[in-house]
Image (cartoon, rainbow, N blue to C red):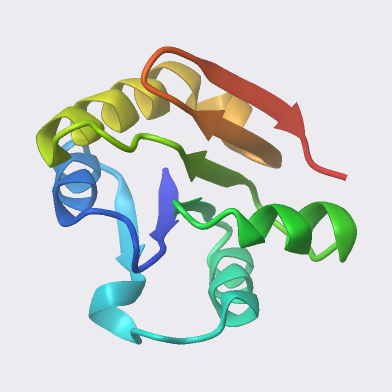
Length: 117
């Protein structure tokens, strides 16, 4: 699966996803501090699902109706980085087909998938 990880995503999550065989473009490695609109455009360009901890992407997708290949919003505060990596890795493995074209929220105890507009 093709994924773009926003720069606020913990590096252990990126390492886990890559170890699981996913192609991950990591904004922190490519072009830190680029605007959210450019991050979303990068994901669309690569046909990739965006993984982020930034709630502003919800506004871009739902209010501004920006194109998206799918967004996964991480709400995992309080978990250690390796715990976050495990939760995200398992969620992507179990729901990868559903993540494409959807807006997904992952919390420590719940996963909610909503179709993007």
